[in-house]
Every structure is written in C-alpha cells, then in structure tokens.
Length: 295
Length: 238
Image (cartoon, rainbow over all chains, first blue to last red; front, top):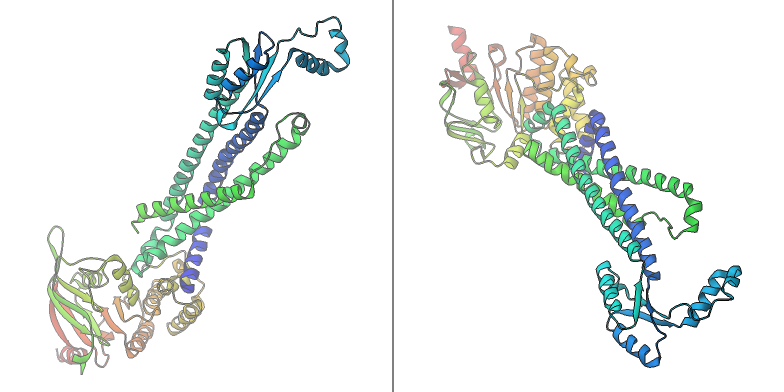
C-alpha cells in the first residue's frame, strides 16, 4: 500500500512537472470560475441577511376612518388573528399625533395650531415569518383592505416587491454562475487531461506494456484533478476575500449608517466550497480519463 | 526431470494472419518449461516477432490456444493481462524507450508498476547497469545514447523486475562481440536464478549455452526444435 502511494505520488509529481503550463491555465480558469460563483453567492447570502433584518421590522399599517371603540377593536383583532400574526397594536388618533410630534423633535411647534385628532387611527400588524412571503403579504393586505372602516393598508409594497424581485434575480444569477463553474471546471479538467494524455502518449503506452494497473494510470490524473480543484477554489476564495475587504474598506462609512452590514462566508461554508470544488475536479478528471484512455 | 517443471509457455495450433493474407504464424505448437532458455531463430519475416507479440498479449491469435505462466490469454481480463505483463520482461526490437527520460527512469518503469520499493528500484538499476557496463549512463537521457546502449537499457528494463519469463526480440542486433557477451552473461544469470528465456535472434554465435534449445521458424511454421549443442554440431558439419 505504501509503495502504491509512493509510486502514484511520484507519477503525479512527474506529470505536474511535465504539464505545468496547461495545468496553470486550468488552475486560473477554475480560480476565476470559483471567484465569479462565490462573488454572486456572497452577494446573495448578504442580501438574504438584509432581507431577514427587514423582515424583523416589517409591519402592515391599516389606516381606519374612525377611532374604533373597544368592541370594534375586538372584532378587528378576531378577524386579523385568523392569519398568522405576531402582534397587533391599535394606535389612536392622539397616539399618532404624539408620535408625530416626537418625530418632529425641535420643529414640533408647527403643530401648535393643528387639532390633535388630525391624524387617522390605525392598526399596526406584525406578521409572523411564515406569513412574510410576497404573495402572502399581498393576499393579507387585500383581505385587510376589504375590512369595514379601513381607509388604506400600507406596508412599503413597492419596496418589498422590488427587494424580492432582486432576490429572485440573484438566485438565478447564483444558479447560472454555479452552472458556469461546473461546466468550465469539467471542460477545463477534460481539456487539461487530454493535453496531458497527448504529451505523455508514449509513456502511457509503455506503462501498459510493462503491466501498469488501471489504478496506477488513473490515480495520478485523479490526484491532479483534486489538486487543481483544491488550489483553484482556495485561490478563488482568497481573491474574493481581498475583494470583500476592499469593498468593505471603501464603503465602510456608508455601510455604518445603513442596515447593510456585509459579512464574509463562515468557515464551514468556505470548507464546503473547497471540498465541493475538489470533488468536482477529481470527479471530472476521473470521468475524462476513463473516457479518453478506457481505463 | 524437465517434465516435472511447470509449463511457462504453452502454444497449441496457433495461427495468425495479417491482412490481406499474410500467414505470419501457421499451426504452431510449442511448450516451454520453467527455467529453459530457448533461442527462436528464423529469417526476417519468419514470424518470430509475431510470436513474441502474441506471448506478451499485444496481439491475439486467430486460431489456437496461448497460455503463459498458467494464464490462458484468450480468457484473460484486463487486470489479469496487466498482472501477467508485470511477471514477464520484454526487450522489444525497437526498444520502446522514452528518449526524454533518463536511463534510470526508463528502467524503473517496470519495477514501479509492480510497486517495488524505492530502495529495490535503486539497487536493481545500479546492479543491472553495472553488469551491462552502463553505470556512468544512469542519469543520461535515453535519447542521447547510441543504438547499442539503448538496446542494453531495454534489456536491463526487461530483467529489472526479476520476471518469471524474459522475451527478447533480437537483443544483440546492435551490439558488438564484447557487449553481446555482457548481455548473454546477464541472461545466463537470470536463467540460473530460474527465469525462463525466449530469445528471438539471427545471431548463431549466441546460442552455445549448455542446456539451451533452438526453435526455428520458417514461413510461419515450426521447422526445427533441437538442443542448441546438437544444432551447432549439425551446422558445423554442413
């Protein structure tokens, strides 16, 4: 076993030395593919995090034409609680006025001559997470609008719709770049192996004549593929990390004021990307060598 | 006594035809036992190389049965054929050396595929190269050697993995008398250690080994099968 390992490792090393140019080209392509895929994936993951943060603040405001009495409030509560809501808050005209006044801070003197009941009463509804997909929000909002005494329902619909469209688009881009990664990786591995087989044609012929087993011929290509996958993904992720640091440093001031707090991949995710790339390249080389050499 | 020894090569009514209708081998039957040294002679095109190619599994016969070291070649799987090739050493007429590899690397291939230890490979390479007067060429690229030197490297590779059987196709074709002596000396050492040898050759001067046999092929058919000494005597009389 030890001798087998030493033999295939020395074969692999010899092959790498002989075909380093084509391997370097493959390595660069894999690095670039991993960089593209992980870039979009990182944007997607961060966007989802932003979405989660927004979700936590998300509420529907139902404006009412009149201040509801206790009985009407119970009636509204009963109808709203048919849906999955976390919390329902009734805001009276006076409470709305006080909130507005507090928001105006030093300029609240503009309200001096305004009657305290000029703002409508409202119901603030905080939906549960299960209710927060876009279509459910729309349905819920439509239902609320049909309730008696409701003037208007507001939940930043346009903004939420745009955000979810963006998330959908990102998901497609991530899937496409993932497909691109798989295609380019397997193509480049296949191409690199074809070049290696071509440049080592006589040697492979000799190996067969002296009785090399299929594993002896196959394993070095498999190891080469795995090495390309591991190095390519590590290089791609390193480049992404540098890019991430640069973006973070460049937009640190703006980010601090907004809700966008960018974060990099966690260690398990990084490991998963490296392992998957390694397996992908090793698998690609295994399939290619079986196809090209029938071993 | 020889009947008790294991059969290493068993050919029964073997024929091989190349297109359009070149009968390279025609109804050849031959049995070679362990430890024998056989010289396969015949004119160019008689079928010597074809026979060696059948024996190392490069070609398959059209008819007949070929068994090597107990392995029926017609039924051998890929893995069995690979295993068989690791147990026999072949010195090809065209050497099959890799010109951009060193002499040591070329010899090492036959041992590496058998997963021999590095130490064994190193010591065996040094021993064989010393025996064939090529010790100073160990790190030279095979492509820069003379034909005679390349031939000796090919022979060293065939013998390196201590095979049960060595097949050599014109192993002294490019050698002078002195180096021919070295190669035959090496073959004799291998034979003394139990290796069976089948040497295809034109060179009558090399088969004066005690106990060796000569098998002559003419136009693809087996013509003579005699002890080398008897054949030498007969040739001397004529």
